[in-house]
Length: 80
Image 1 (spheres, rainbow, N blue to C red):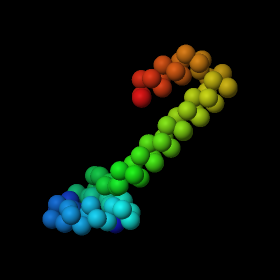
Image 2 (cartoon, rainbow, N blue to C red):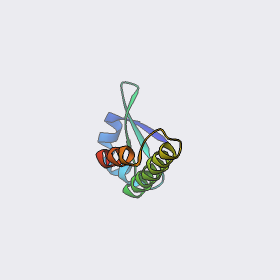
Image 3 (cartoon, helix red, strand yellow):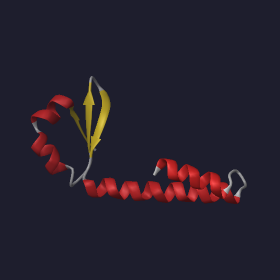
């Protein structure tokens, strides 16, 4: 992943937008990562994977008796 300072990202924003189609770009400030810029396509992929993960975790919690159907549905509704 390409890493840029916030100053470099601001000065070269057009180049940042062009490069996110290849890989995400990490933005740092005072040597701390503060953001990652990625394509909307990649963001949507990650969001779908997150939804799948939460669904599987809820199904496992129900199966193992850690939570009821209603509890997991309420939780899923609250984070959706």
